[in-house]
Image 1: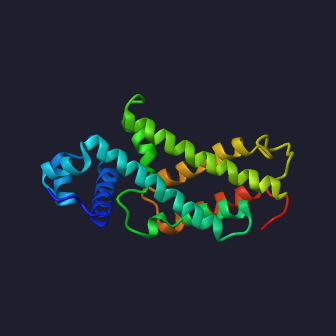
Image 2 (image 1 turned 90 degrees about the vertical axis):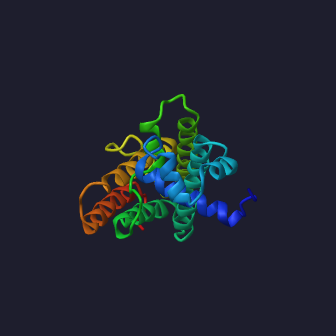
Amino acid sequence: MPRQTRHDRQHSLDQALALFWRKGYHAASLKDLEGALDMRPGSIYASFGSKERLFGEVLARYGRQGLVELERTLAANPSPLGGLADYLRTLGGLRDMQRPCHACLLVKTLLELGAEEANARLAQELLDGMAARFTQVFEAARDAGELVEERTDNASAGQPARLARRYQAIVMGLRAHAERPISAAELHELADDLADDLLTLCARRH
């Protein structure tokens, strides 16, 4: 078969991403992949090697897209902490658009696959990378004097890595909550509340 062009390959990965995100890795059959990618089994294997390797490429693509969305939001706000709050508000719009799923694909993968499977390890690495980026942003907020260093009601204040872990848990929870049968307005309200809570860490409000 002729080698796929970059455009065709990226389109195929997007189609596979939508399928795996909606159905999960194991539930997505070869027949499902044939239909989603509009490719015969031989062509799928020639292009991607195996279902497992295809899923690995999908996870990597999903991870890159997530970082691009985060960086775009952070770049629009001169305040590091304000940018993180804006990102939560952006996630409040998850139900404003049609998506295969609202929950994080990386988290879904960890829940579905055994811890020793290669793609579960990849999902963990991608989540670790996102957590590291969150830590960097909290470090920037601290260096800019945005964080209250000591608070009796919040032991994590002033500790970037600890704040990043909590923030990532909030992001995961918000995405999971978006799967519930709630209205778009209710999700926006929840995201706004979480963003406002984050800004209480500020030494100065934004």
